[in-house]
Image (cartoon, rainbow, N blue to C red; front, side):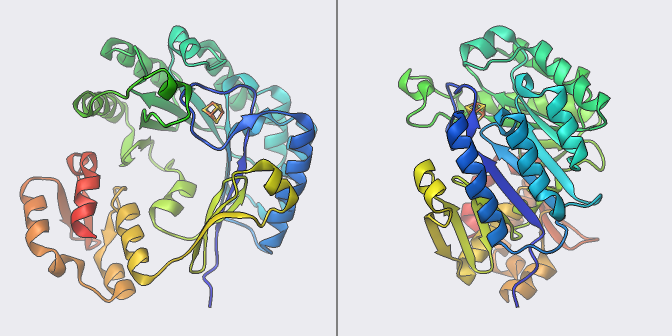
Length: 368
Ligand code: SF4
């Protein structure tokens, strides 16, 4: 019997302008396309036949708040049957497109978490990467969300943007902390082909520089009471992102919208990234993969080791009929001795330390 799926990701691919580093599935906002897109999206959501309340919904993008108010309300109203007061309901937004009306609509339909793309708090840096907001817009957006009663706020920062020195990074952290968010995500810059960054020959910082940036962020955020609970994420107690934990626990989720990925039953899929195809037929897939037991094991290790909860060894044994500890005893001993991982006895879990999370790719390669 298929396990009940408790999480839904929805992708809104439109943005008011395109940032120089962006590799997400996104395109410039255009009203007629947006209207047709929301129609296809609703059909896709209906096709999932969800007749119960979900634990988490995450509307990401692109920029979901770039939708015009009536379309935005149309979508949220459509989703309202899937939501109750226990649903963690998040929406991503850019600071400049978070208006009072948008927040009122969110509040009306039960959205209780807002994730704001800050990326840098230095206005010159923001301008240089073609972001349209200033740090003052971020301050206003956070104030607005709280005033309207949405108090669970995540702020995103990118580490390693061009010209961000350690001094500027210190200032970024200070500025972010001054807003007292519940959750902070910091992702290292990657430069993808076909982005303006790539065309302009911009390179991400060297590994050791990025590592020192992570160390600085981790030190400051930990001192300020945030817990490092996933490689790139810090949260105040009780404010971990339940939706993202679905991915990191390797649990199943519905994915709807252009280029959205999902995991249902034994299938992992990614929807088409072609807007015309999606509008014509939401069922178009870019890829579809039947997950074998061995793939599942790989995903399980790759995702679970990202978090402070690690891999529960009893659960792993039952699921994969394999003793992870015995199978990799020699290698794991090395990790334990060098302080990269440990066994938490109360839960019988294999957990990476902060140091281990910083070299996670290597650890995973040795375990799969
Ligand atoms: S707003 Fe976000 S999704 Fe849109 S272009 Fe910028 S980074 Fe990409």
